[in-house]
Image (cartoon, rainbow, N blue to C red; front, side, top):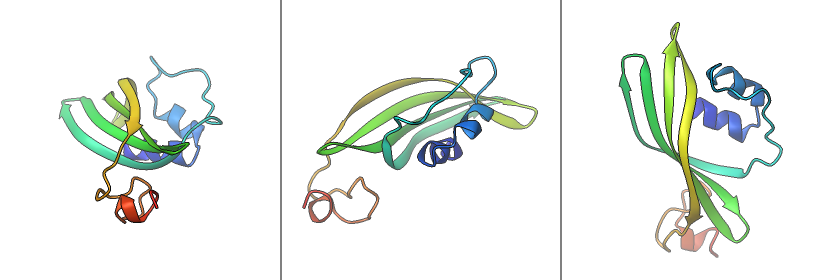
Length: 116
């Protein structure tokens, strides 16, 4: 999952297509309208044999703040490699508190970073 997130950040559609299972992979993938990703939080993960699940939240910038894409993803392992199958997503606006770490990834408190 982390490598796929990195591929979105670096805009590497070929890698994403290569790691997408052939049964659910789109014919093409454009990342031209991809958001300005700032962070990834893996909320949970699990594996049962050759099936895996990852629940994550990816943070990105929007005008005036930050938003998130949260997904419960399904993966399958074939011949020793993991492939993305599908995911159930939801999106929303992120409202960090003044003393929370800034979603931009600086490590500073929100009130002293992007809120300032």
